[in-house]
Length: 372
Image (tube, rainbow, N blue to C red):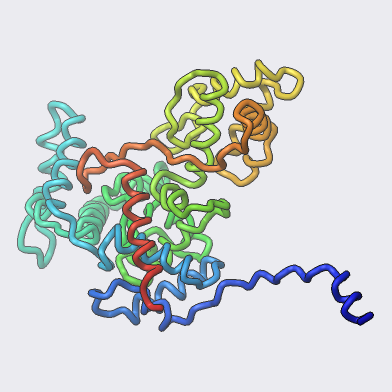
């Protein structure tokens, strides 16, 4: 009886939260869409890529990667892009049009040549490309052809503008997960890989999955709904968290701004512009309502943290969230769907980041239901 009384008085032990079960490559393969031929190789590459990215291999993480692959390429390492030849020609035409009266002679000098073993001129072959790899390699072939013919110019370019060739490559996203080539090159440099090596790797199944997975999990945003991570994959790291900060600040001030996930304004090279953004103007309006807690200088300093996890702990974000919660009587949302229109010659017009995130989420949910 005494034992029963003592037991009744003891607090119940807190249940231990079990870690998600780690999957082997074969289990990942069973999550691949049923109509895909070589499930084993995709499962192995996703498993390897998640470990490389420092992520646990669970149904959740594996299905996030597989959903991106399915959305972006349909399980093709180097997918064909409809009308890619016409798209590439259009991009080339736009470049030459900017040269005005000298466009035609410059075009002939650059493209009216036939490389050894080729069946047509560079101009003719541009319209025949079907995949990103073909377009990328043809671009590099054209550059290499002229560098070999004009070595003095090539050496001067290497000194004066070492990134000129890479910056003008028309292929900016590639592989089975359509990852940003520029981002992949920066990431590959840490492993000692050059730009050409990274580009070639992206056109392989293993390389495309490796860099795409690393990009998907490059930041540690604590999103409860994977739609926001998918949105960040499309719109930029922390875009969903930043869009929430924009939405909260807009609500507090009554000033409408674009909820695009960019706190600062950026130039064509992706560098912060000196011109003040509309979002910062709204955050400064919030600061004006809380002069004892937030200065203009602090807002401007905190805004530069927008692409990092440190932005969460900044005074600006803390005050915006607290003020909104006090006004609404409930916790402030951590994430908001970025309102970004997708403008790419490789996809249909009228699509948005929300469209992308919803489609990937649908594929993610279907993946979770497989392989049980």
